[in-house]
Image 1 (cartoon, one colour):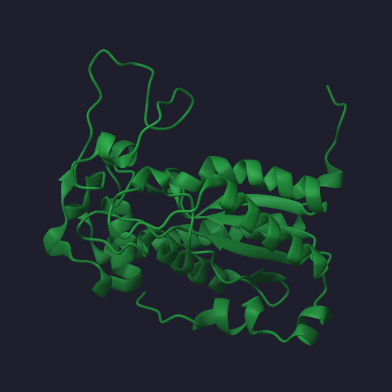
Image 2 (cartoon, one colour):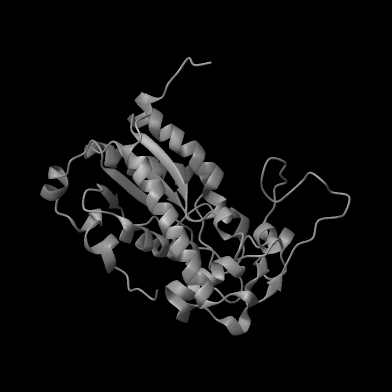
Length: 273
């Protein structure tokens, strides 16, 4: 990919911030979908930039926006580069917001989007530590503004079953094969493959239900599960694999965003049997 920022369909034609106030005022609002990328600035091991999550958000959205037709009224906001990265506190370069601060910032942005007349907002997340909080925030924004609010992640592991081994899909949750490959494609000169580690956490054999994420969960910080600040096998990462992952993610994201732009919550059928 190796695309420079502010190029491509996303930034040349659909970047809301490049419009004047008069142009924003004139946009049709009823079906307009505003996408707010929310990433993180946090350590990703010895081989990856601390900007990894936000960089991935920008990269896959640039890919996704290449799939839109002229009639698709979908617009991109500048990314919110900081997220809730408290699990990485103490690791050099990590910059985190508290949960309360992130909620306040997203709410203020959402209110501003609503004040401009828009009725649909996507919280586009590229950092695992934001996930649960953004689900809660999306509902609070809906209550506060009346907008239709969606939360969408930058990747879906179900798209990668033929590319990524099961062990990596389960335990490679931070700076492993997937993220390293994606960044190699997006901005490869920011990755130091000579420093890429292998670091998998192993749960005790008698632990059957608890896991790092999911329905039966234990709270952890990165030092609980990693000796290197990452989790997975980054040595398997390649540019070619990253390109395939980014392309698959882009197509999935594009279709999801188009569905969000036409979805109307008032058309839900209630009281059925």
